[in-house]
Length: 447
Image (tube, rainbow, N blue to C red; front, side, top):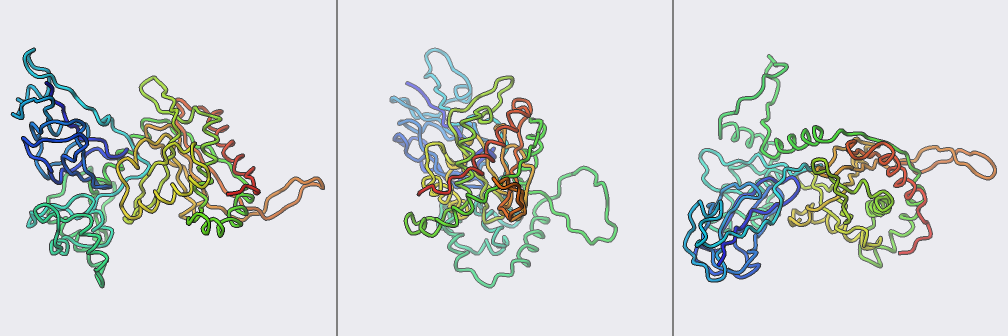
């Protein structure tokens, strides 16, 4: 006889809590292994939580619409014929007397606070004082990115439990919506949020405008989390950033020569990202010390090479889906995986597993036209690479006839690393090795 605690799982490196949308099972219901018990939502994804065991749902500890921190017990499942009667709070928290059923804690995720390079911003579409309708964080996020005010959202019919608006409902509404004044909608949202709740006390402002020609925007919950995570990363890791400039003319010429045939053969567009990932993977094999994390005074070297890649969301924020076991993929496999994750990120279809388990992160600041950046480490990792825009520049080439100046495709690479465990020699050598792999790219490589 045993009782198993169902734990709110970790849904991503920047997600600290989730909202319960619906319980698909009631107390006393029989549950099969991996059968869905409840539906939850975060600012990034909606997800179904399966049962880790077969048994009977003995107790539900949180109601629908409750916001629950990760790692928290949300239900009790009785197994091996255990009675479905609700256990006392003491039984849930600690082992009871010898005659009582033992508690078996199934830990689905470690509830340690971590930081993300980027996280989805929660929408400013909070419930107004006159609205009792619940909207999941994902639905509010989509509404905010499309400029849909709360007053308009109230009129959209939902197909979820008790008329709840689902992701499918809001996406269908957006697809059929036309002529909505986005600027006006944004103004309405700010006004409604100001009326929804009194403003929390804040630190005294360093400067005050007496003209009134300002707009004060209160940070939403996710923006506050982002701020906390970034500050935490800076406080946790002494950041050092190294830079190199690489001549990537060979790989640019190679991509230009194969991209047409690549689409015809594989049905995929090949971007520079899988090429960068391949170089990073090779360099990690040469310098495994950067594929690590820190736990107190222990350095945890990761055997798996899981590369996180920053991708843009419809809201304008960034999310970091992870290419698992990137070292096991060839160029075609990397290209397909990169395109799949990027496409699902843009359409809000990433699953929780897609954004977990990264061991090293790559961010492409060149997509914004930037030539270099100093990225903040994605805790608990110890390094992050930023790649800049590729630009044509004059460069000195050494030839058998002497030095010449030629027009070359050049780019900057910048590596931020945790100086507690990655010193200048390791960080600088690793970065230089990535540049070497890019510069020595085989132009005769076949797909």
